[in-house]
Image 1 (cartoon, one colour):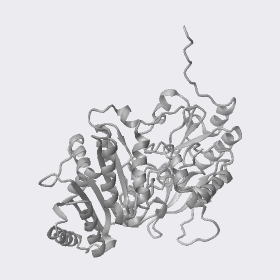
Image 2 (cartoon, rainbow, N blue to C red; image 1 turned 30 degrees about the vertical axis):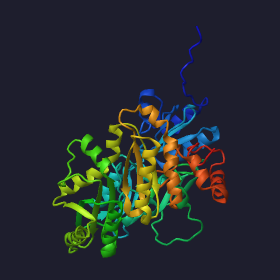
Image 3 (cartoon, rainbow, N blue to C red; image 1 turned 120 degrees about the vertical axis):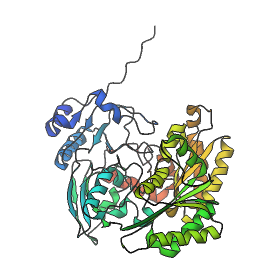
Image 4 (cartoon, rainbow, N blue to C red; image 1 turned 180 degrees about the vertical axis):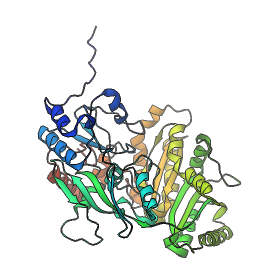
Length: 482
């Protein structure tokens, strides 16, 4: 009888575990397999890794001390926030050598200044907690995304998260003034400055935002706040086509660009999945449509007549044949119900079966062409497959997702992931777009980075990585191709 391979038992170098216990304490080092289990697979179930330990420092000083030990021992580190990555960016590999780092215990809001309009939040603060703290102080932290109940400040900055309000407030990078960062060797960049203008040397904070934990570990950030909305108006519209959706966005933008907080596109097939799989989801329109948009207006002026603005623009669009039907929210409950139809798209697709995610962006003017061409190409590539595009039309970022054909084996479908992504990316490249709009590069797409950002640009990225992480210990195998 042939020998049965022994299961992998991840281990750390002799003495290192005791040393880590010495600087992090018993709560700061987790090695029990049952406690490690939730950290070894990603939200989509596409990746699974192995790890000898989960580290949970309670302060920046503890993290710096732990990083010095790990650096000296040559042990790789994988930072993990809310573990909501769509591209495997927070997963250890299968070798069992990489420790996982969680900053969940660094979860304090250190300062909130309504006059400066800033908040200093540690990396483990959940995004929704930061939003609520700002609201309690009469302010707004506008970053908003579907995973805001689990995503953390460190994670959204490390991935330069976008979300629903980018059209108005920008990405995470635009909402950050300063960072505190622990480097791979344990050095600490103490850059928690609340300045709007600061040109003293290189802006190191911007290297860290969007680096996906490959250059340094964000431990705290100075975040920009804004006046809280005092007037809001939200509508769900059935529109005649992708072009009609863009025409409606232009009408709102031309009438009052500053009032548009979000402008989201949803295909009819994606909406059907939400209505099928999400309990309590209902369509507030008289008939199903092939295309929908969610329009969200807000203003800090209490006398802003956003309801009047919404009705006036929709009336023009109805007369022009762009809008087929519309429902305006009359209460906070109705606003939440409309937004839920948009936010539950990823969950509904997951419940329907296997899907391949394409997080792409193109110039706003080319979004309709992106959707039309991708839909046709994907249907030709895999007969019976169901395109479910949705996302942030107002900033050009569409999640050009593809749901498996009904009855097809999920494994067989997912084996075609790269062909599907290549199909979409060929169209995106032709439209002067990007294959990674807001989900990042992670473990899924480093080879694409080499194709899209080659030459001197990729070489400069490699040099930066080598300078800050010469041993290649921070989130190895992510972002940059091997």
